[in-house]
Length: 210
Ligand SMILES: [Zn+2]
Ligand SMILES: [Zn+2]
Image (cartoon, rainbow, N blue to C red; front, side, top):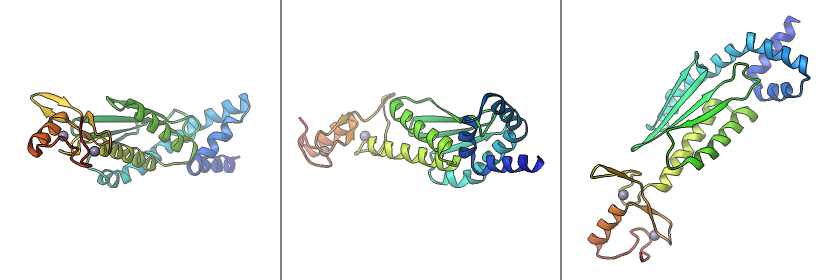
């Protein structure tokens, strides 16, 4: 009996996705017993291990980009990741359920402004990786971070290379898009460019702006 509990605990650590889907197939009473046993004897150790793995890797994770900060809390059973670029701040919370790894890991974005829809897609990707593909927190956060970097690379102004332009106390996103190459510009940056070059052309592809 003790041995099978030991094996079960090891399985939770090594193959959480497998254990989760096995748990999903159990009948009511047995399912309740497994849930109770896991919550009482396995979950806090499992969560602590996942979080400490992430903490060990956090320095290398943050080294991936200066714009990422990761905090973990054993007490709250969660991870808080903050991505910041210029004035844009995006916050991601990943919370383990009380009966981890049986229940699903929840993710939530805060402080998201203009990219709500993309964030939902990336959250889904993260949820899939963490809950169904035995993905580690580090893999999930690295992917999340890369998605944001790629997104903002595509959306930054191609003249000043920033996302947010502070002009006379107001913040602007690049909203003027070239119809040919699809690159975006702050209207201020583009006007300055038109004046300097004395041509109404896209700085990148040289096609005419109407
Ligand atoms: Zn600009
Ligand atoms: Zn263009």
